[in-house]
Length: 496
Image 1 (tube, one colour):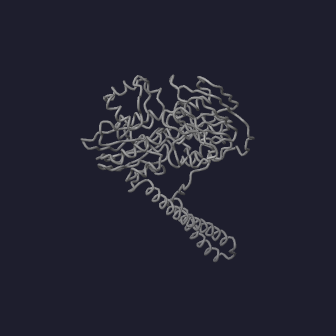
Image 2 (spheres, helix red, strand yellow):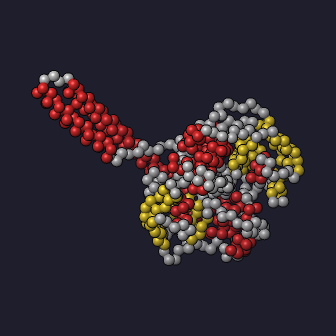
Image 3 (cartoon, helix red, strand yellow):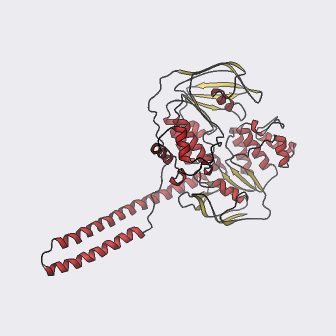
């Protein structure tokens, strides 16, 4: 149904993939995986003819009809009604599909910018699936989705009779729906194909890495033996000449020394010419935070009878809460329930409609969408400006965030959505605020980077509120309380 052959693409100073080759058959459901910045979204855009490859080709069946959900919806000033007209979708068709995703009584005159991240995701999924395409391409479709939305999407894809190519950081989601995996290897920039679901792929990768590490260790022992031989031969040649007195014996010693030198040269050539195995990267580098001091417990935020509006619509009514300096809070709720509005209130981005809020804290905020960065500024320059760290410290953090050396001097505009998320999360935490606000921090991240986020938050000593639908992240954070927004009420469960 779709065949990718010898596809290559790069940015200035960065190769994404070379000679990428794979195929997807009818009804095959394939996960496209790889680290942030490896080129997953670019590969999708090439398939959809939104980008031109440097070489190679994409061959599709003539009857193929794509349905596409982008990782980051395009910015538009259109209303929902205008967007549906542009995509040739009737309102009644959309309403039927949207209701299955939990979107009911939508305002069609409302601008896209006024919908929550979760509502936008559901709108894009509804539009992509409404006309029964036979090939779905989904780039991080579960970003911002609540539990009900993810459940519906899994059920839909299980029954779907066409082909699917999906990028997702949600491991459970992938296990439920895919039967094959295409990996972009960030080391050699090639694509590799695997059968089975995501867990099958991880098991095969773990086995491969274990075998590679064993080969690497054998190789290092072999290299050490060659280097010892070179040193031994050198000493033998030097010692033979120096310790020989008689001319005849000395001439013989020179022949021995010449042979030894010849062997030394052969060994050194072997060291240079052999294609040595690079050390496999078995674990993500850990970012060490300089915040070992546990803050004294003190009240930093207190709210009494707080009402919150979004787009002139009440989303939270008469909320009472207090936040202390060591609190670790998870905030959950359906899409559009007011979670982001609550964070924006704590950051003083929106005003109260009623009630009293006392905020004694310094706040750092990572929003759902944080892509408005100075595109011409270099990565290192931007990081230093945001953190006030010296060059050596900044390079150390960027290295542990797995940015390559050739990326550090490149403009930020070349970064993927996931790389920007990692960068902004690290900057947000390094600001060392009293209260850290994170809105869906694992969106756009690859699986290994999610592990970095989990470790960062486990080590963080201050107070935080994390809005997330990622159950594995929730389980890892050892939260002190769970905030749930249900029917405009903030329900707080302590000591979870």
